[in-house]
Image (tube, rainbow, N blue to C red; front, top):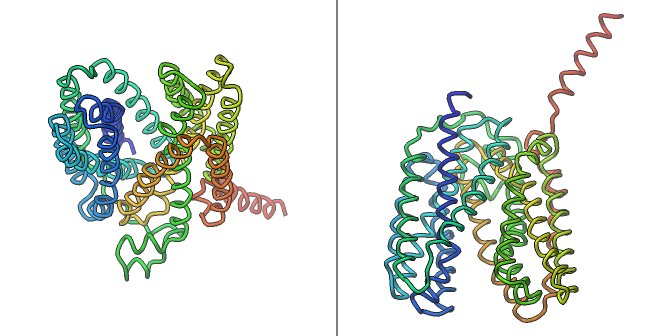
Length: 432
């Protein structure tokens, strides 16, 4: 395992570079299209839609490419596409050019995600995988936070050249990702049999990777749960909740930025502490606990709506909502990725990671549309009630998933029990 440490460090540095680039540009894409290029909110919305739809176009091929050629060539292809898309986005002035470059940008970013996840799995064993994914999540949040902070110092809506520089630097960041992580040699794929929870071997032989994954009932249940998680939390984080805070509660943008910062700070401070707790618990328990924490977050949001005329109380409540979201995210980070890795047959790890990423991207794309629609129509109590109901469903689905996972996939430590029982029996026989 020690010889993999350097490779894993390069993968994690690559994760941080990628996250820095995302935080550096994504928060300012809307402003760039709407205000700097003067194309309006409709064009900006279309750009984000195309950015999200790019995932649907490339992820099925991404998984197949990882399984056939390995994660490194796919990562290099993704960084090249993303770099071209980011640079072109900063140069485009018309709607057509922005839409095309947005598609390339989104396709490249989406291609890199399952490749990086597969690299983490290749560079870790089962025992340290949860910590590796937790560290990845911490670095991603830290990188995005720093990127957004630095990018905000560069952005000047009265100077289009400042945004051009922003996206040019983003393109260089992807080239940096390629140089640091794309050149790291990966350990060979494991050749042990597929986990018990994966689809049967006959199905794997008779069908392709996607067919095998669809036939895996445990993976399908996990994808349904993941879709609900990303729709309810990540799909609302910067859209529905932000709209509720600013439009309904009257939270000023500066305070909203403080709340988002509280979310990132919560994750950075708690993540490695939380991972020690989740290492000794069922993964399904951690997912259910995340749902319970988010239920408290939606309840706190309801309090903010009810006391919105009390500025201080409403502000504290909004900041608490974002902090509670961070606690739930910290519980999920060491669980979701490792479960996908344990469910996947080793030869289809890329397909499973890409399928999981596809569910994530779809939910994150649909979530903002639903959230902003409900909040914008003035039905914020209905919005909060719907999100609370979704959160309760997350808890229920997490508990039900338990019966479809093997003890190893659910992080149940059974080896110690299995070893103690024969030893006790031998001691009784010796005494007799």
